[in-house]
Image (cartoon, rainbow over all chains, first blue to last red; front, side):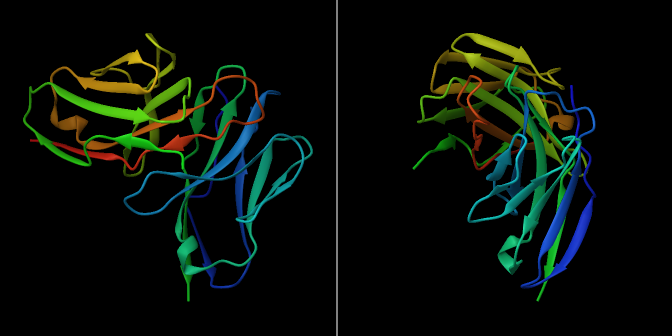
Length: 110
Length: 115
């Protein structure tokens, strides 16, 4: 099964952009790249997903490398409410099985 | 509003007890999942189900079983609870199929303490 690798933690200042990296060198052609985040004492919530092209939504942007072996979640202006654990997930289209990375704990400083 | 509801938010059980964790989703999803989450280990898949009465083992199925008698309900069973099963348990659901990256919806989590 394809795995993802993320830094354990990152720090950012409020209102600055944040780039959260994820490596997935064994990704298969049918795997979608999802990002979820988890606030303290809550279940994870969906942030964004993509397959090959870069994606934007109201929460974030997802930049996917041309070879799809890595991706970056971009928060354009971090707020204190963005402090959470961010998970990069490969969603296997062929099997529908979720494969979680280790997650990155994002701290946002005021 | 989509919803995955876990019946118990906090439970305390004794070693050797049989424990049921219930999960219900109201989105008519085919896929349902049970994860456990432990500090430093992230989320680990215990079991998942892609249809009624169908199940597949995840990465850490030992000590657990599951039941899916109805599409909307997925139960996690600890036949004989042990202290190393103290954890937060997360239920999730999603549509099945090769549609573009189905979103996965999680419940709020169930904190289980086995004493």
